[in-house]
Image (cartoon, rainbow, N blue to C red; front, side, top):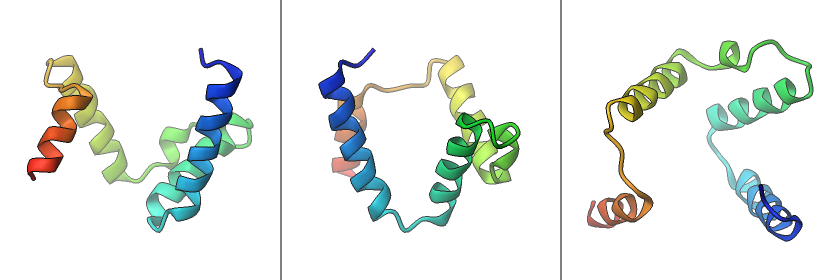
Length: 81
């Protein structure tokens, strides 16, 4: 669990990130999560696009098969493109 200071900092980072978003699918996903957390929507899974569902299920399968990398490996791969 985050302490109060870390939580405030994370919230500020998220607000800045959300304000910079141009991808409508991410905005729609965040909105459906918000509605779901407020009890105003059905299952957020139902709000996802088919592509989003496929990507999530693929990620879960990778995790279950041990096909993961840590953050350091991820950023190294991104940098080496």
